Amino acid sequence: MKSAAQAVIAIALLVLGLAAGYGFAEWRLHAEIPPKAVPGAVVPEGIAADLRDILLIPDDFQRTARVGALLEPLGPEALPAVRAAYDSVVLDLGDVEIVQLVQWWGRFDPEAAFDWARGSKIGWHPAVVSAAVKAWARQDPKTASHELIQRVQDSRLASAAMVGIVRGWEQSGRAGLEEFLVSAPPGSDEYFALGFDAYIRGHVIREGPQATIAWIEGLPDLENGQPTPFKQRAFQTAATLVVDYDPQVAGDFAARHRGPTWGIGLLLRVGMAWAEKDGAAAMHWLSTFPPGQEIPTVVQETYRKWFTVDLPAASKWLAEQTPEPWLDPAYSTHALWRTRESFADALEWADRVQDPKRRDRTYVSVALAWLRKSPEEAQAWIDHAELSDFARQRIEKMRKLRLSPPVKSKIPELDPFKNPLLGEDPDTADPAASPAPPGAGAPQG
Image (tube, rainbow, N blue to C red; front, side, top):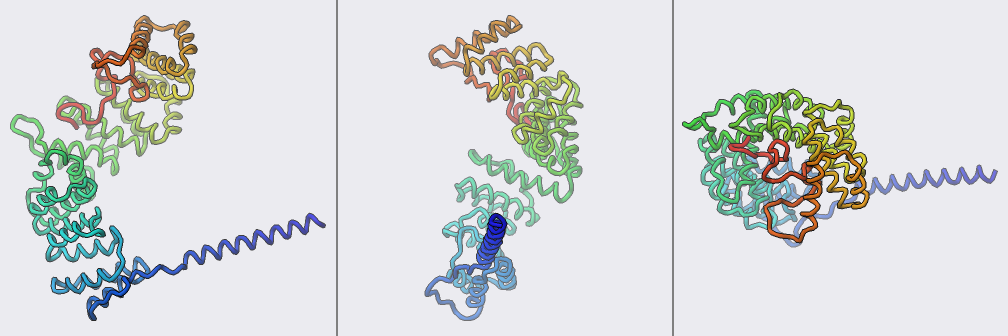
């Protein structure tokens, strides 16, 4: 009886606890929002007072809908009243109402709206700056883009503003946007790249992946047959962006342009972007390629990207594959990763590598990592392993280099976790076997 009574009491307490928790949650959901009115602020009757009341509406959706409805029919003569209403409430950096203000203001005086954003502590925000320059670019894109470059030094703000320039320029219907996008001054590549991204993405969304690729491929070349700077950037950007909409279209596009003109860049861009979405499909795509000097690097970096995004899926997939030469870079990369946890596992993965030279280089990389962590165990394995003369000599050479005092040298830092093919002489390394950053080659895809 006693235990039964205790059980009843426990259940009752649990129910009370849940009820109290639910009541607290309800209170939290309906807690009053602190007033946003500026104490002592006085606004004139009419538009200013009406707008101030709207800006104080607690519900975000109701407030922004009402702000838009009130501002939409107003002209420049209402600016003083609108400014007075905005000055009478507490607004924070990047609030939607501030974006609405510069959008409306930009209809009749975009430069002034931009200057206000620059001088305002609550207006100098990516969303606000982008809205301001977008309104300016609709009317005068060349001036807006020039002033953006001159006046905005913060790269984060410049990046957001560049998207506004692109969209506003498109809406203006005026020529010159493509020329502007390839005219990046020194130090501005990062935010110009985002502008280019927005431009190509707009094409993909409006016209579809196939039509966008056809447009890019049809762009004119220089007189010497080489692609123009704009075409180069368009190829590079499309190779990555189209993957989000149709990976196979992007893959076919990169495959068509495999060769000396575009180098390895297009394949790398597509492979790595595809791996983030569907690593197995990306690897299957690569399995269809005939052998080529660039393919091992693309396989390596595509697989590397996949296992950094979804290690369990990538590991499981690779373990289920029948060893084939085209998979060698993936096995080598996986072996190097396994040295973090198990050198025995790392060696088993290295054993799957089909090409003797690459397998030797993988053994060397594993051995060097092992020597760094457990020198005696590693040496015992080296002494009894069936290693080629090249592998043994290479291990010894690299070990001596590590034990030598630091000297200025052309030999790069040796880090097996950054370079899965550690152990090659820089001057004799197989270009197809070493990782290469996207965009390597000339001109790059």
